[in-house]
Length: 337
Image (cartoon, rainbow, N blue to C red; front, side, top):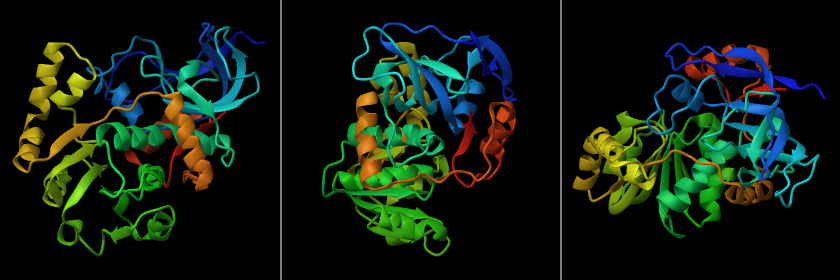
């Protein structure tokens, strides 16, 4: 076997997102890891946050850094301590935060972070599910601790996050409301939304009230509107708006970081508190056991994520990053190997 592989790497944090494709050694695996031959890797806005240094207070990296957070592929080697997986198995994963590197021909990954690939999906489709799937799962179960019979609203839920969050929420017995564009209305109702608002025709602030939970995908500009439609005692979880002190505590950060994040998130916490709502922020972690549950939900509901029609190879990595950063992709952007 050839001992080197191609990998997309960055050498420093920079606002100019530019990765180089380098020849590096195929990684050795530890006893608890598997070596995966990568078949497809999805490109996320998270790559920009990592590359620009925006999240270095949450997770700092050493350079050169192979980038990429989620992938699907085939197990090539199995570590001595790994149970339940064999060479040739199709798996998918959101890589552990401390050890990313999906944009490479091979990756060594902790077996605790992987799960069998959903049988109804191609490699490209599966690579697009892990990160959003875990975000939705951890958001609903851990951050919101949502209970059956309660209501959750996902503004901007017609994108790739909503496609997986809606069936997971439905599976938990939640009343799911989504706002988004007209094109994905039917599909979103089909996978479990009880109500769908076309944002071009109706403003959710005028239509909704007394909502238990909101999962925000749009960011800080919507914060006040989202608070307005919620019932006291509710929780607002944002994927975009920014971390706060609670987030820093939950992550077990040192006191100086807790203070810093507390200062950054203070205005959101204050606004939320006025309405007796708790503000939460999430930074998704790897979890193979949760991913196995997501596999079940994806197969049961035959969820197939939308992919951007043009696929890219590793050599096109900068085109793909540019599209995700500044273009209007029509679905998840995928690097195919």
